[in-house]
Amino acid sequence: MNGNLRAPVSTAVALVGGWLTLFSILFGLEGLRATLLGWVMLVAAAGLLLGVLNLGTVHFTKLRGGSRNALYSFVLLVALFLTFVITAWLGPEAAAPQWLFRYIQLPVETSLMAVLAVTLTLAGARLLARRTDLFGVVFWVTALLALLGSGPLGDGLRPWLAQTLAGAGGRGILIGVSLGTIATGLRALLAADRPYGG
Amino acid sequence: MSAGDLVGGFIAALLTFLVFSYALGDNGLFRLAVHLFIGVSAGYAAAVALNTVLLPALLERPLAELLVPLFWILLLFTKLSPRTAVLGNPASALLVGVGAAVAVSGAVQGTLLPQVAGSTSFFSPEKLAGALGSGQLGAALGYLVNGSLILVGTIATLAYFHFGAKNHPHQLPERHRLIELLARVGQVFIAITFGVLFAGTLSAALAALIERLDTLFDFLARMAGSL
Image 1 (tube, chains in turn purple, blue):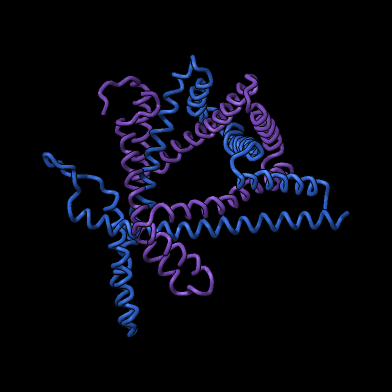
Image 2: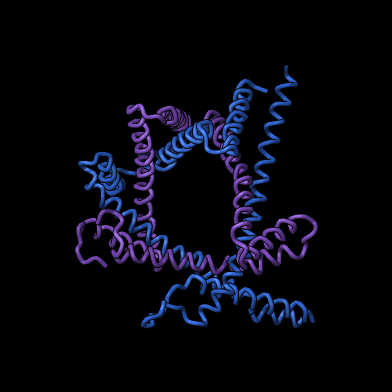
């Protein structure tokens, strides 16, 4: 822990807010929990607006600078502005925002997922070529068995592979991730990490 | 087909082609589609945050209830200018502190405890007694074998990520022999897990590819039919 505290107010706010929230959750203090989370939800929503505003500012600066990628910034800014105005004015459930979602967001998202099929296959082939040790072989044999098991071939094999063997590895990874999350969270709650300029 | 659907279908088809051009390598057309996507997504997210979180609270709650959050929001917006940005640090600190508390409690209650319980659920006496009571010896044996595999796999996977090692003079730091052995077993379980995840993601990506191509051909066929 860094003993040289540069931002005592921010650190105190993080500690008081964090520990009060943790206690309210652990000891079931519903009123306190709802109040704190209600406040933070509003601040986080404002933070999201601030982030989008910052994104717009960065691309506006790029556009004014006339950089090589100014066209991309122009497209982003126009899309951002129009979508925000239309959705904020009409509401997210209205026909126009739904049209934007159906004909712009959804096709690009699905197409990016589709491109992933190509890049994943290439990356997998590269792994097989470069890494021929136990890990690489087990990885590929499992992947092939799991893919074959998606069809009628693997009625019993795939569930056992996915739920027992892969389930065990997945549980280990999830427990590791949660332990890492707890350690990182506690470092913030003990002010050992101060990612807010402290 | 309405005019909106026609224009939308054309834009969707064009965007699909632009994104698919990435198969030939990173290029300007792909980046154009991605920037458009980021603009629309960011604008949509900001409008949803404004419409569903901020405006209802500002319009429906009494002012006294809003004074505290408004104070923090005001502080947060000082981050817009580099000269006043330091004033916004306490608001960021509040988000970090409360976020860390929610993450810790969520990790304990939502992941750690359920996963530990899940790792040992096959050894549940009720389950084993139920299988033995109904004369299903094979099922009881299956519970024990699968349960042991899950328990060993979970512990071995965790051991793989244990990097603590003792320092010996004039020697490279080494993990304990037991941890090293478990880590090797864990590596096999991790490879199996990644293999299954890879297969699942590849299947989902292929399904998305088929859906996109189907939509594309369907749109082109409808266009050709209407000519």
